[in-house]
Image (cartoon, rainbow, N blue to C red; front, top):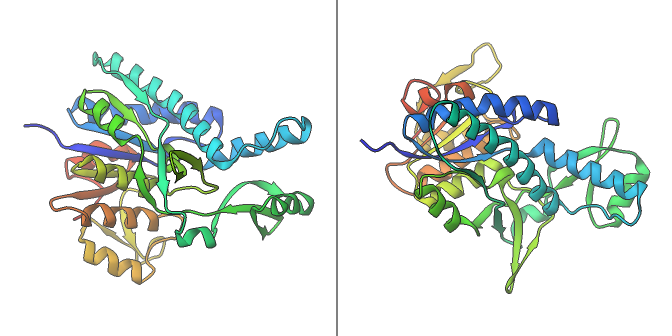
Length: 309
């Protein structure tokens, strides 16, 4: 029987933060991804990039201070850079793991651009903290450039918007490569957010929630399953409290009720649940699964994680 087609979204724990952490983390992630491929699942992979984007922007900003002829890199450029170097490590480790198992498949990373709506309300309410800690002078420089800054405990940090993904410009390339049997890594970090202006695509000063982009990609590909891999084994009610309850399966209606109750952390589980609801609601017979990285194969086989139907 033909296995399901799955978009796999890797969380921060699967990627790491620093370069050495990333090198080690993707070796580990590759083993679990190879398990899925060995079991004949057709997978397209996406991943987080939050730490990497902040690191790249901080490095480029510091370079601009040391060498004035080098300008600070825009958010869109940092997003594209992060897709490239995370994909470089991840595709090589997945390739190595597959070859060690006697499986011959091309693994490819696509620099992917995600369309956003210029009138998205998120642009007027930037909320995602990025980059390094700044002093007051540096914060004022950012404000002078038209960027948003908030004061935190020890200084200042930049905040950017998180608009919803509308379309993925390279989706046809993702589909063709995946259908040809290649393992595709796409929409890393949610994809580079872009605004379409005539025939041009212009980078937006924003980030896209990785899980929302994964849901959009799975929808556009017409896939059966969205598998969101994270640091915890299941979705919980009252998470972290004495009365926490693990959920094996929930419906979209139940998930929406729990969202209204404020059961999920804004920057942790909530984006995953919202992505799952959006994907499952868009077409019949779909499911989304939220599970721990090491349980990836068991989750697809119904033995682990939380299923949203």
